[in-house]
Image (cartoon, rainbow, N blue to C red):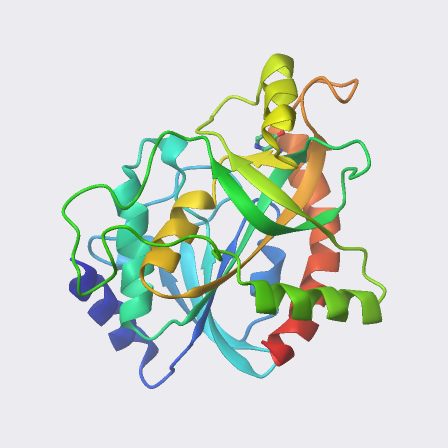
Amino acid sequence: MIEKIAQQIQAKIGNKKPKIALILGSGLGKIAEEIKNPVTIGYEEIDGFPRSTVSGHAGKLIIGEFEGKEILCMQGRIHLYEGHEPQKIDLIIKAFRKIGIEQLIVTNAAGSLNLDMPAGSIMMISDHINFSGKNPLIGVNNDALGPRFPDVSNAYDRDIRSKIKKIAQQENIKLYEGVYLMVLGPNFETAAEIRAFKVLGADAVGMSTVPEVLSAVHSGMKVLGFSVITNLGTGLQKQAQSHDETMKEGNKASQNLISLLKISLKEI
Ligand code: HPA
């Protein structure tokens, strides 16, 4: 199935050879508009490709140039809370690897556990806590695609992160760095859960990203991840949580992230 998906994507993109894949989170779809000479492939056009069901997450791959580099952009990710098996995410990432992707940039919307990191902030992910209880690598391991027990001690590549930190500093873009904790969702957290996650050492909480990262690391890709902070965690802010608010704040902060990604792509 990996092979079949990879072949279909390859057939549609012809001689394009992207090495970087970019997964866009809620409210970050705007980045896709900046891709030049795009080839767009709806998920429904790819036999065997899962479909995204969340509003605000159109499901398509956009392959083209971004700041002079060929990239494959995934607009509309697959979330486990939609009912997808985590292995479906593995299938997508392994198909990307098959067509030559070497580096994965993941973005997401997340809630902050830290009052000093307000809505509108960008957090570069330094590490994660998989609190979802799910794993895309469960099942018979194909040793040709990656090891049975992958090392994840440098999942979010240290060298790339240090380059990005320097760039952000030079460009005067405020960049936080921290630990992302994944919950399964789809409900926002309770206030008690947010207090607990803080004790566990998390800085931000969201409902995605970890499965993609585990698959990417398993297949030998380098990973860079960013959370756009759309709200404070439940109990840390006065108002109730809402998806609309998440989308609104995501749209605002995404402009900063686009700027950072543009400059960063030249350096990584
Ligand atoms: N919790 C979980 N996922 C999220 C949040 C949150 O507060 N904000 C955006 N995605």
